[in-house]
Length: 116
Length: 111
Image 1 (cartoon, chains in turn purple, red):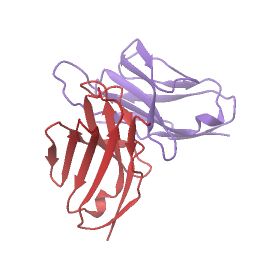
Image 2: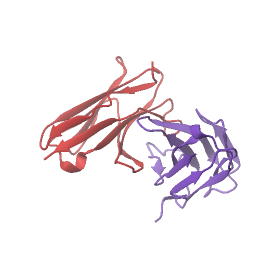
Image 3: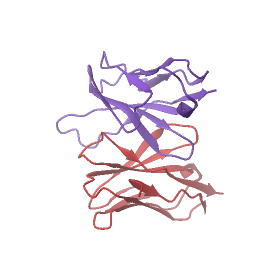
Image 4: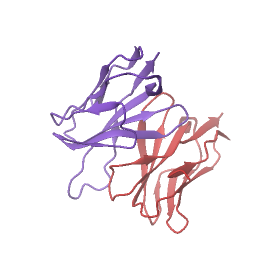
Protein backbone atom coordinates (compact mmCIF):
# COMPACT_ATOMS: atom_id res chain seq x y z
CA UNK A 1 0.00 0.00 0.00
CA UNK A 2 1.85 3.10 -1.27
CA UNK A 3 -0.28 5.72 0.58
CA UNK A 4 0.52 9.23 -0.62
CA UNK A 5 3.25 9.50 -3.24
CA UNK A 6 4.92 12.77 -4.17
CA UNK A 7 7.30 13.42 -7.04
CA UNK A 8 9.89 14.74 -7.41
CA UNK A 9 11.59 14.53 -4.00
CA UNK A 10 14.03 17.33 -4.79
CA UNK A 11 14.12 20.06 -7.40
CA UNK A 12 16.07 23.22 -8.10
CA UNK A 13 14.37 25.82 -10.27
CA UNK A 14 15.48 29.11 -11.70
CA UNK A 15 13.43 32.23 -11.05
CA UNK A 16 10.57 32.47 -13.51
CA UNK A 17 10.49 28.78 -14.41
CA UNK A 18 7.37 26.72 -13.97
CA UNK A 19 6.85 23.22 -12.70
CA UNK A 20 4.25 20.82 -11.42
CA UNK A 21 4.56 18.90 -8.17
CA UNK A 22 2.79 15.59 -8.48
CA UNK A 23 0.76 13.92 -5.74
CA UNK A 24 -1.20 10.71 -5.93
CA UNK A 25 -2.91 8.58 -3.30
CA UNK A 26 -4.24 5.06 -3.47
CA UNK A 27 -6.42 5.07 -0.35
CA UNK A 28 -9.56 6.35 -2.12
CA UNK A 29 -9.52 9.41 0.10
CA UNK A 30 -11.88 12.17 -0.90
CA UNK A 31 -9.95 15.05 0.68
CA UNK A 32 -6.49 16.13 -0.48
CA UNK A 33 -4.26 19.00 0.61
CA UNK A 34 -1.09 20.85 -0.28
CA UNK A 35 1.05 22.42 2.46
CA UNK A 36 4.34 24.22 2.51
CA UNK A 37 6.73 24.16 5.45
CA UNK A 38 9.43 26.79 5.79
CA UNK A 39 12.36 26.25 8.18
CA UNK A 40 11.28 26.57 11.81
CA UNK A 41 7.69 27.21 10.80
CA UNK A 42 4.49 25.26 10.95
CA UNK A 43 2.79 23.84 7.90
CA UNK A 44 0.76 26.35 5.92
CA UNK A 45 -2.18 25.19 3.80
CA UNK A 46 -1.88 26.24 0.15
CA UNK A 47 -4.90 24.57 -1.48
CA UNK A 48 -7.21 21.74 -0.69
CA UNK A 49 -9.80 19.64 -2.45
CA UNK A 50 -12.88 17.90 -1.06
CA UNK A 51 -13.36 15.73 -4.12
CA UNK A 52 -12.73 15.41 -7.83
CA UNK A 53 -13.49 18.66 -9.61
CA UNK A 54 -13.58 20.74 -6.42
CA UNK A 55 -10.70 22.84 -5.11
CA UNK A 56 -10.44 25.73 -2.70
CA UNK A 57 -7.81 28.15 -1.44
CA UNK A 58 -6.01 27.70 1.81
CA UNK A 59 -4.01 30.20 3.79
CA UNK A 60 -1.20 30.89 1.26
CA UNK A 61 -2.51 30.23 -2.31
CA UNK A 62 -0.78 33.08 -4.18
CA UNK A 63 1.63 31.88 -6.85
CA UNK A 64 0.12 28.38 -7.04
CA UNK A 65 -2.60 26.56 -8.93
CA UNK A 66 -4.16 23.14 -8.48
CA UNK A 67 -6.54 20.81 -10.24
CA UNK A 68 -8.36 17.65 -9.19
CA UNK A 69 -9.53 15.73 -12.21
CA UNK A 70 -9.47 12.36 -10.45
CA UNK A 71 -9.85 11.16 -6.89
CA UNK A 72 -6.26 9.91 -6.87
CA UNK A 73 -4.31 12.88 -8.22
CA UNK A 74 -3.86 16.43 -6.95
CA UNK A 75 -1.01 18.23 -8.75
CA UNK A 76 0.32 21.60 -7.60
CA UNK A 77 1.59 24.01 -10.23
CA UNK A 78 4.02 26.89 -9.84
CA UNK A 79 3.72 29.15 -12.87
CA UNK A 80 6.47 31.72 -12.24
CA UNK A 81 8.83 30.44 -9.59
CA UNK A 82 10.04 33.01 -7.06
CA UNK A 83 12.69 32.69 -4.31
CA UNK A 84 9.92 33.07 -1.70
CA UNK A 85 8.56 29.72 -2.87
CA UNK A 86 11.67 27.89 -1.70
CA UNK A 87 10.23 25.44 0.80
CA UNK A 88 9.32 21.87 1.56
CA UNK A 89 5.98 20.94 0.06
CA UNK A 90 3.79 18.23 1.56
CA UNK A 91 0.76 16.65 -0.01
CA UNK A 92 -1.75 14.96 2.28
CA UNK A 93 -5.03 13.11 2.02
CA UNK A 94 -7.78 12.05 4.37
CA UNK A 95 -11.16 10.39 4.38
CA UNK A 96 -14.24 12.34 5.36
CA UNK A 97 -17.67 10.90 5.54
CA UNK A 98 -20.53 10.22 7.87
CA UNK A 99 -19.23 8.65 11.02
CA UNK A 100 -15.63 9.01 9.87
CA UNK A 101 -14.52 10.38 13.21
CA UNK A 102 -10.95 11.49 13.65
CA UNK A 103 -9.42 10.19 10.48
CA UNK A 104 -5.81 11.33 10.27
CA UNK A 105 -4.33 13.20 7.37
CA UNK A 106 -1.77 10.98 5.65
CA UNK A 107 1.23 12.85 4.33
CA UNK A 108 3.59 12.18 1.46
CA UNK A 109 7.36 12.26 1.94
CA UNK A 110 7.59 15.85 0.76
CA UNK A 111 9.22 17.71 -2.13
CA UNK A 112 12.20 19.93 -1.32
CA UNK A 113 12.12 22.83 -3.76
CA UNK A 114 14.77 25.51 -4.13
CA UNK A 115 14.31 28.56 -6.34
CA UNK A 116 17.57 30.26 -7.30
CA UNK B 1 -1.18 36.45 18.40
CA UNK B 2 -0.48 33.26 16.48
CA UNK B 3 -3.40 30.89 15.99
CA UNK B 4 -1.44 28.05 17.55
CA UNK B 5 1.56 28.74 19.76
CA UNK B 6 4.13 26.30 21.03
CA UNK B 7 7.41 26.60 22.87
CA UNK B 8 9.91 25.72 20.12
CA UNK B 9 12.39 24.20 22.57
CA UNK B 10 14.66 22.44 22.14
CA UNK B 11 13.89 20.23 25.10
CA UNK B 12 16.87 18.00 25.95
CA UNK B 13 15.67 15.31 28.32
CA UNK B 14 17.46 12.23 29.73
CA UNK B 15 16.14 8.85 28.78
CA UNK B 16 13.50 7.63 31.19
CA UNK B 17 12.40 11.09 32.26
CA UNK B 18 8.93 12.58 31.95
CA UNK B 19 8.46 15.58 29.69
CA UNK B 20 5.44 17.79 29.05
CA UNK B 21 4.63 20.24 26.28
CA UNK B 22 1.92 22.87 26.22
CA UNK B 23 0.26 24.53 23.29
CA UNK B 24 -2.18 27.45 23.25
CA UNK B 25 -4.71 28.28 20.55
CA UNK B 26 -6.45 31.57 19.86
CA UNK B 27 -9.73 30.47 18.22
CA UNK B 28 -12.16 29.67 21.01
CA UNK B 29 -14.48 28.03 18.46
CA UNK B 30 -11.91 25.32 17.65
CA UNK B 31 -13.40 21.86 17.80
CA UNK B 32 -10.72 19.29 17.05
CA UNK B 33 -7.24 18.97 18.46
CA UNK B 34 -4.32 16.73 17.61
CA UNK B 35 -0.67 16.07 18.29
CA UNK B 36 1.41 15.14 15.26
CA UNK B 37 4.99 13.94 15.34
CA UNK B 38 7.56 14.93 12.72
CA UNK B 39 10.97 13.30 12.53
CA UNK B 40 13.86 15.25 11.04
CA UNK B 41 13.34 15.77 7.29
CA UNK B 42 10.27 13.52 7.32
CA UNK B 43 6.55 14.01 6.95
CA UNK B 44 4.23 14.67 9.92
CA UNK B 45 2.37 11.69 11.31
CA UNK B 46 -0.61 11.68 13.65
CA UNK B 47 0.45 10.82 17.20
CA UNK B 48 -2.91 11.15 18.87
CA UNK B 49 -6.14 13.06 18.91
CA UNK B 50 -6.97 15.12 21.99
CA UNK B 51 -10.37 14.70 23.59
CA UNK B 52 -12.12 16.93 26.09
CA UNK B 53 -11.96 14.25 28.74
CA UNK B 54 -8.25 13.68 28.18
CA UNK B 55 -6.85 10.54 26.67
CA UNK B 56 -3.94 8.21 27.08
CA UNK B 57 -2.07 6.00 24.63
CA UNK B 58 0.64 3.99 26.34
CA UNK B 59 3.28 6.41 27.60
CA UNK B 60 1.53 9.40 26.03
CA UNK B 61 -1.21 11.46 27.67
CA UNK B 62 -3.00 14.34 26.01
CA UNK B 63 -5.24 16.85 27.74
CA UNK B 64 -7.42 19.72 26.61
CA UNK B 65 -8.39 22.78 28.65
CA UNK B 66 -11.05 24.65 26.69
CA UNK B 67 -11.46 27.40 29.29
CA UNK B 68 -7.79 28.34 29.07
CA UNK B 69 -7.46 27.29 25.43
CA UNK B 70 -4.48 25.06 25.82
CA UNK B 71 -3.52 21.51 24.99
CA UNK B 72 -0.85 19.46 26.66
CA UNK B 73 1.14 16.35 25.84
CA UNK B 74 2.87 14.30 28.52
CA UNK B 75 5.45 11.65 27.66
CA UNK B 76 6.40 9.26 30.45
CA UNK B 77 9.48 7.02 30.58
CA UNK B 78 10.92 8.72 27.50
CA UNK B 79 12.78 6.63 24.94
CA UNK B 80 15.51 7.60 22.50
CA UNK B 81 12.98 6.96 19.72
CA UNK B 82 10.78 9.75 21.10
CA UNK B 83 13.28 12.32 19.76
CA UNK B 84 11.31 14.33 17.20
CA UNK B 85 9.40 17.56 16.71
CA UNK B 86 5.89 17.52 18.16
CA UNK B 87 3.31 19.58 16.32
CA UNK B 88 0.20 20.91 18.01
CA UNK B 89 -2.66 20.96 15.50
CA UNK B 90 -6.09 22.56 15.77
CA UNK B 91 -9.16 22.49 13.54
CA UNK B 92 -12.26 24.71 13.60
CA UNK B 93 -14.39 21.71 12.61
CA UNK B 94 -15.33 18.40 14.07
CA UNK B 95 -13.00 16.60 11.75
CA UNK B 96 -9.69 16.76 10.11
CA UNK B 97 -9.82 19.34 7.37
CA UNK B 98 -8.54 22.94 7.54
CA UNK B 99 -5.91 22.10 10.13
CA UNK B 100 -3.78 24.84 11.68
CA UNK B 101 -0.32 23.66 12.68
CA UNK B 102 1.88 25.05 15.41
CA UNK B 103 5.56 25.52 14.66
CA UNK B 104 6.43 22.49 16.75
CA UNK B 105 8.40 21.68 19.87
CA UNK B 106 11.69 19.93 19.31
CA UNK B 107 12.49 17.10 21.73
CA UNK B 108 15.83 15.32 22.05
CA UNK B 109 16.14 12.35 24.39
CA UNK B 110 19.67 12.00 25.73
CA UNK B 111 21.08 8.53 26.52
